[in-house]
Length: 393
Image (cartoon, rainbow, N blue to C red; front, side, top):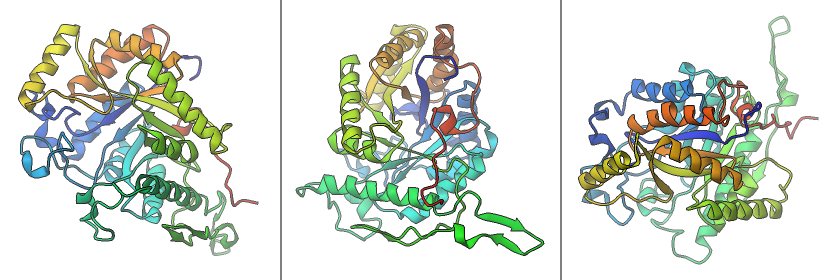
């Protein structure tokens, strides 16, 4: 990071914030959640702080704040959402350096479609696209498509492994399609009438258990060559997916020792996959509620919990405190081996601006975060080289 030794910082954007009562806060904008201007403001805030990237949450079903409840049980939380890839494409021209990483559920979608969508995002953003691949084992999402038995894959022996093996094949198809055009395949020679060199377009001829894709893509190779591929991982199977298929994995440690142990597990899986020499970022996920004092942050979260009717909990560690306290934690866990963090604002805009205008200056004051962007592409910001095309001579 160009002389800065601290962690990289990303923000996970999800509607009005990660707390189910976030939309009821006085500074929330619930009437604008489905407008382009709302999302443009959020990514503008993130870019002004020189964050590495933002992720956009997505799913294929309505959600509650608890997987144990059905959708019909709640009418007091934000259940709808916009398509993450389309949000990213809409705000891309309004930014110049910030990475844009939408979530895509790969269990029910086709890799050919997603490959050209993310390639398009890479073109629209000038090389700042990524994707967070997500699997689904939820019956309500299966019923939207009718291709598989509802709920299949949750309880049968080996079913979880199948879901993640399918996701690994999906990512392999994505990567092959991104490489199916060589970098100089487009000639655009008006005098000869040749737009493309067909000898530099390649069939990928992928055949596996879940996909049979011939290729090539209809979209030329993206500016980054390979847009960033990332995944969230909590346990052995997703660690294995991340280690063999991704450039970046989000993990959910509970403390410093846990962070070190998880990094060790990811690195072991990476070595097992034959990728020990490949760069793979490990980012820690935290949900954050930030205020000027610890008491103020705790009181605000308690008020949100009371409105929601239950104490908020998450798959990730929930941090409640000050920007300085969060900086202490991030730098401590960074020393345990995490290369960065993806922070989930409990409420938006309050906790987003507490990150951008509180945490970031705190880290800068300690010489632990950039003051200016040092690269124009997302891979460049993360210190990742542009990959060689696997099909080029």
